[in-house]
Length: 99
Picture 1 (cartoon, helix red, strand yellow):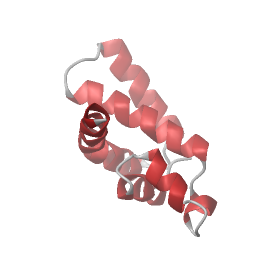
Picture 2 (cartoon, one colour):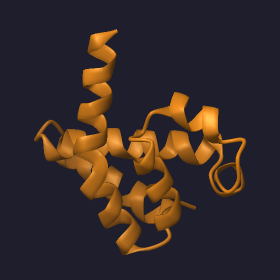
Picture 3 (cartoon, helix red, strand yellow):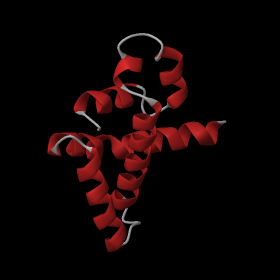
Picture 4 (cartoon, one colour):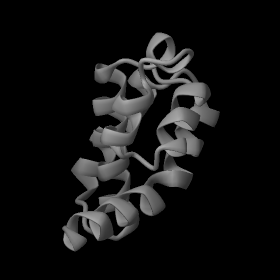
């Protein structure tokens, strides 16, 4: 289940898994956030990004809402993911294009 704390850790690393892996051996990260959580947040933020950019169908949006409700502990966690999604995805996209 995704919590505010997990979203905070994800955001601290701006969704960049490499930076997280380098530090994940140090408490409290590895205890609090596993690879499955990370990948789920990556998927959810990508989907939120598509919705916010107007690139999603109504069916996709409804499916995303259900995924958020079933994977996040509460509405505050969902809101936090929604708030960071565009920034995280855009930063990762810029980083990928610079390589």
